[in-house]
Every structure is written in C-alpha cells, then in structure tokens.
Amino acid sequence: MKKYLFLSAVAAIFSSVEPCSAADIRMQTGLMFDWWADNQISDVRQVSVPFTVTGQINDFSFKLLTAYTDTRLERSGTAGNSSLGHLLDTKLCTSYQIVDKLPVDILLGLDFNLPTGKTDLRQRNLALIMDPDLVSINNFGEGLDVNPTITFAKEWGNWVAGVGFGYLWRGSYDFSKEINITDYQPGDIYNFNAELRYFFSPDMYARLFGSHAWYGPDTVRGRNYFQEGDFSQFGFGMNYNQEKKWEAGLTFRGILRDKIRFQNSPGVLVTESNDRQGDEWVLDLAGKYLLDEKTVLSSNIQGRYFTHNDYATTSPFYVGAREKLSLGLGVTRALGTNFEAGLDVKGFLKHDDQKNFPQVLTSRDFRGISVSLMFAGSF
Image (cartoon, rainbow, N blue to C red; front, side, top):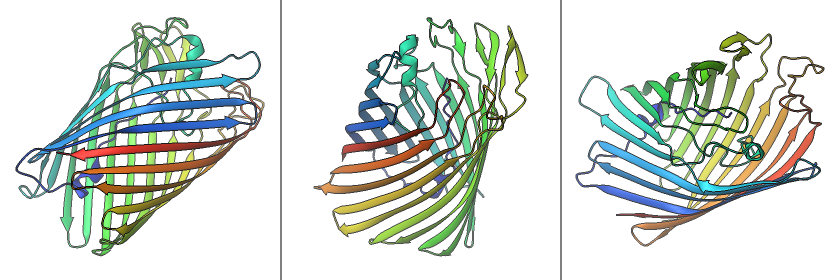
C-alpha cells in the first residue's frame, strides 16, 4: 500500500503572496497523459482531467483540487490486463499567515483529504498502484485525513530561516475486500521540516533543507498490521533569478528510509532484520526564460538513483538498484489579462535491476512520456 506525506510548507512563508483586500480566485483545469512501456511488454496509459481552485482573502488562502483519472495496464502472458476510471480524492488545503506582526512570521495550515476517490480495489486493479516514478497518479483513494501544520520563519540580514511541524491523522477505509484488508487505518504521521537560506544578492541565494517523518502503525480491523520506517530528507540548492528575464535552480537531495515493522503474528509487529527500502539520491536542474511579456519557456532535467537494499541477492526481500533520467520542456502563454494556457512535455528513461520483492522480476528497462495541457483563469 503506497504512502503519501503532507509536509509542512516551510517554503510557503518565503514566497508568500502580498495580501489583497478583495478575494482573488484562480481556477485551473486541463488534460494530463502518461504513457510508459518496458522491455517485458508491459504498457500503461493514464489520462487525467485535474481541476483546481485557489483563492486568497487578505491573510487567508485556500486550495481545492481533485481529478478524474483513467488508468489502463496491458501485460503479456497470464498476468492479465487491468483498468480503472474514477474520480480521485479531493484535497482541501487552507492556511492563514501572520506576517510582520510578531518577532517571527507564522503560517498556520489545515489540510483535508476528502474521500471522493476509489477504495476497496479488486485484486486485479492493485497492479495499478505503481511506482510514482512511472505515472502521475498512483493513489486512487483513501479515507478522511486531517493535517494541521504550523510554520515559523525569521529574516535577519541576508539570512532567512524556517521550521515547520505537522501532524497527519489518517482515517480508515476498506483497502480491498478480495485480499481481506478491510477497516484499514494507515498510521498517523508526525513530521518536522527546516530550511535555511542565504542571499548573496537580491538575485541569488543558497539553501539548506531537511525533513523527518515518524509513522505510526497501520491497523486492520483494530490489529497492528504494518509500520512504515522513518523518512528523512536533506539537501541543498542554488537559485538565481534575473528579474523579468530568466531564472535557474539546482537542487541535490537525499532520501533515507528506516527499517519497516511487519506482522509476525496477529497484531504483533517485529522490525525487519535489514532495511528493504534502500536510499534515494536526486539531482534537479530547472530553468525559466521570459521570451516576451506574455510567454515563458521552462525546462527541467532530473536524475534519480535508488540504491539496492540491504538484503542479499538471494533473499526473497532483495530489491536491486534503480536509475532514472528525465527531461521536460514547457511553455506558458498569457491569453489576455486574466487567462493563461500551458503545455509541458516530459520524457524519461529508467532501468531497474533484478528484484525478488514483492515479486521476482529480472532487470527491466522503461521508457515513457508525460504530456500536460493547462488552462487557468483568475477572477
């Protein structure tokens, strides 16, 4: 079962919008298409129609987003094909900022996951919960989640620092009756984030950042079932912004995941002997160029490397190393005063070494493409 994590938005204080006296509403929709295939004749197509509404009234802001997604997986051999089309869960994110009124700036957040998506999946559709490096959508529905956060930021001289704390309460739902996982309640999450920025000039700054999350145990019908290992992320970056012309950013980050705890007997969890998840290293290079006052060009290159886990190659829990390289290009064009449209295209190549968990697979090579068309208007 895939996990997702609402992290406290430390960076939101740094890029906060100037307060406005009247409501500022933005609506956005579009079309997203993802495709990938591997050298073992698996083929996936995913089409999504997202819908987002954002707004701000003075120091209060909100964001409401959902999407309809249709995902189709075709596989060779006896594995069979799978498909699922459904509305996803709806996210409601709210925040209130207190800026220039106290010794530190404060951002209060309260986010909700509203269960409008699809749960109680059939067994053949569990294969559609894929690696997030392959498709944009890999989670089709969960229960009611509530995520309060608080973020503090302080600026002195050329330095800016922020720390954030969050708690994610996750409600229960039926994951799949066919595999007897009902009344499934994911564990709550406590998380901490921090970021430090130094401005060499108004146009250029460096940043150090990190975060850590602690997971509570998942339960099934009130009994402990599984517990995700702690999640840690750290990294640094450099950003340069030539106002009204171009900007560029370079970020390097590492992701470390601790050992999981699994069910040894009904309701009893034990810690695994080795770490089955491995570490992850990510390098991002992104840039934007203002072609004219209405047109912005963008590009991004990303390299990801997942180390093999700590089990021996002969172990049933062994997962080999993975590598991914992606390249994206985009353009955004203003259409009049209050409307804009955008097109983004991203392609990737990915290689996975052999793995024995959760099933035995030889090494695989992937290729894929994502296309996103966006329309937005402000009112």
